[in-house]
Length: 333
Ligand code: ADP
Ligand code: MG
Image 1 (tube, rainbow, N blue to C red):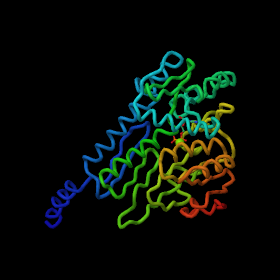
Image 2: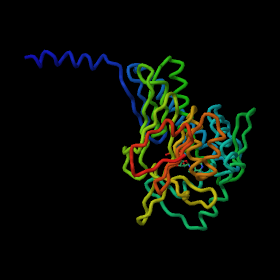
Image 3: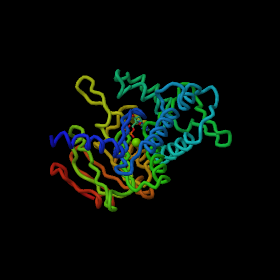
Image 4: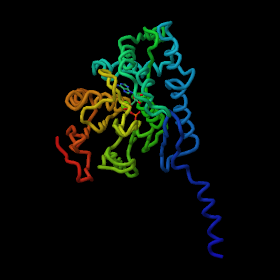
């Protein structure tokens, strides 16, 4: 009797409680946003419809996105593009210039050639890699701000914004939340995280850092932060196993192969997610010394570098926010 009396009340409560989190497959990954007690169906719809819109503009794999149209018309003619894509591309070219092309948004042909993360990954022949690499050059992207067009100079070139678009999208989410007066949220776009605002009672967020040697969900430490984006690029994020060997998805614009420099992952903690996303890939591609120097030259950006030999190096603020929980790893400045 008692149980039956309580049951409908619970159901009613479940119905009237605001939705706590929402997740959706968009931007080629699982995107989940949690507004806790401030969530409502309306705000989630505003957030996710903006994510879908960004996907339909910036995806390099979907047909008829602005990026796809730029790629289809490479070497033919400039293509009109929306302002948001222009902004992302300008930031991408900024990181390309800063890294002397280690980060390159025209990596598309090389990404397609390896097809890592797709159903049919492959190891291309050396000659094919060499020919494909000749199509990768950020200096052949022509942006006309006044005409709002983008042109790739040579036929066969292709943009791929996979290393930066999720960061931009997370910043867009943060802006929507700011306008709506939301105090705290976790925005997780396939591991591209924005720990927005604070937890209840103004407490900071605790964000786990993946152990790059372990299965997904195993943390090696925790970052305690307020209103920061945290983005990791690593060998475990997306990879293909071919003939018993792992090939991950961050490609060297020097030799066309997955970057191999002793790093397992680079985590960036930054105020803007577009910087965190672009910088994590860039610093990983540049390697520790140059990567760290670049991060230190960017305002409001910190980094944690994890090496194959289980050393962890970080910038001072990053280490101040970090608690190591796995004694296999050792921490140094
Ligand atoms: P994730 O996709 O896991 O968030 P990253 O932000 O590091 O990881 O982006 C990796 C993606 O960026 C690759 O899947 C590919 O699409 C693209 N990419 C690979 N190598 C480079 C590079 N050298 N410069 C720019 N983009 C790259
Ligand atoms: Mg990135």
